[in-house]
Image (cartoon, rainbow, N blue to C red; front, side, top):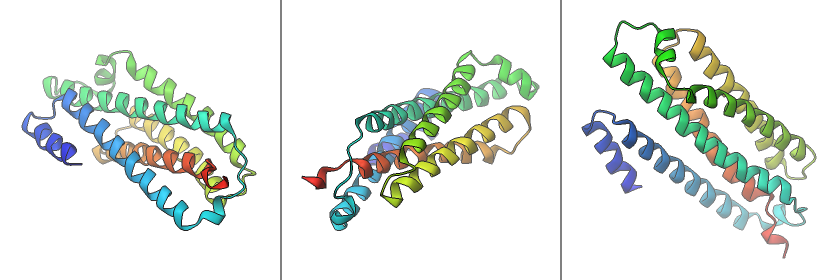
Length: 195
């Protein structure tokens, strides 16, 4: 946590350097993951009976791991796009939003492709959780699917319309919440208390 605080200060000191910004975001995502892990582990220790008798689903567990990796990559790509948009607009203040987007590398398309991949993966995860005996697992499955839909909608709206800068912040926050939610869901469906 202290590393991320120091990185935040360094980030401001170096006027939002894109590389420092990416490392800062990566440490923040790791911190969210660790805190989410601690929360669900303590909840499971208090409520051990809720988690007994769960059927192990290794495919679902692996899908959640892949989902977590992809969402982290997606967030880092989005951070890169946001940073590059800001840097290009500072250097070329007269460019329109369309011209700013055209000035970016092709990874903006990969960001969109990855977003739709996450949608299909979240739909798969939800389909596997619909009949889970744990209410929290079913709820988190639909939450993940809903958040992905909102994130895609918000991302596309930012491309086609002049939305306030604050929208980018909410877009980033929503994705960051997903990182923690996936960690919680993964730990909910693991059955270590069934031994």
